[in-house]
Image (cartoon, rainbow, N blue to C red):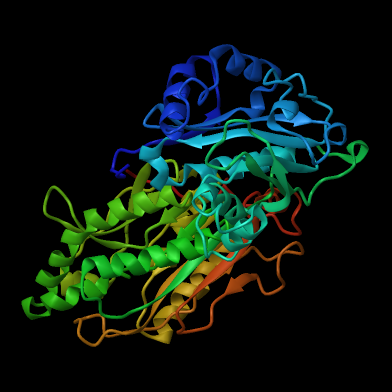
Length: 513
């Protein structure tokens, strides 16, 4: 499926009314198998939803079911490692489901072939892991087909085939995916799924262990995770031969940071400036407007990556020409559910105004995400404390600041002000900048940066109020886990309570528009 600007992705529990779309997705996913047995009958799906609604997951793309993961809970010691699919599912009637069991057993997962580039399977597996943790179950287990085995059966035993898949010498569409999602092969099962000709009725018994599992009497059921993981890209300026080459470097970082299960990725301000090199002869003001012609294509690629890598992306910033022909500095929040919003830099530096004729935006609102409320300020904006305070009053928990500074003086202004914003607004602040030289682009010759994540300053946070920071002037990423619950504790019980102790009887900050 080609990703487009209007893709909307939603993960939720399966409903009765989804059945026809579920059936169609299953038929398409299992093309080549017997169409009479390659999908669950309606009464089976209804029973699953009745007995274990939270275990039946689906992903909708533009409102239609395109992927699903079905599961039950079993008391695993009753079946052991030598079961068949028919046995573990109670002859496909799910009489084996036990709400008091200890293992989440995956009985099916499939993805419509026209959406496989969106990585919906990984999204479903991550949701299963969260369910396993929230229900305090010992592990997830499943019998996995090895559909490419038929091609190698005359040369390899099942054990050797699995070993070669592990070593990436052979690709198996099912096993390769499961191994990449932290499952391990516990055993080889014989005659697991009768009629599975491609696997010659062999299967892998797969397991993912819940490291948070506690004995039932100690369980804390349905606890939400306290941490949000963010990744910063400290981008090395370099010349690119084409727009596609720059996108390749962008995707490299998105792929790398998303592999750490990050919830957010932040890119720097004007990281795409190398594309302006071919317009250098036009002069600075015209060259930046030529660069703005790439902005929509960049936004579209970021939105595609946000969905396919399942991560929220703050796109750094880029020039943008509005309907009145004004030149602005814009950043996009591309959410992993397919939606996006923008923020337009409000405070324009003298250099941006004089060299490019850039003007400032006039809107400020907090952004809702699946990991809390965030704000975006671009570089110079963070040096004006009023904006961050207005965000904080709307419930902002994390402030993202893409920046670009040429000298250490300029960088230190951004850094010191960002640290102050974290303290005075009781929030986290993440800054990401560009490094290196770009001698063939006017007004972009040199860059200095040390990307970092700043915290409030109190006992629950690092003593220097720095969660993590990059090596100065080196291309790299920074990954950090942020505990949002600590912000609530700080707000109510901190050694000082800056947000609560303001003298609003004497002063206030008002947004005039």
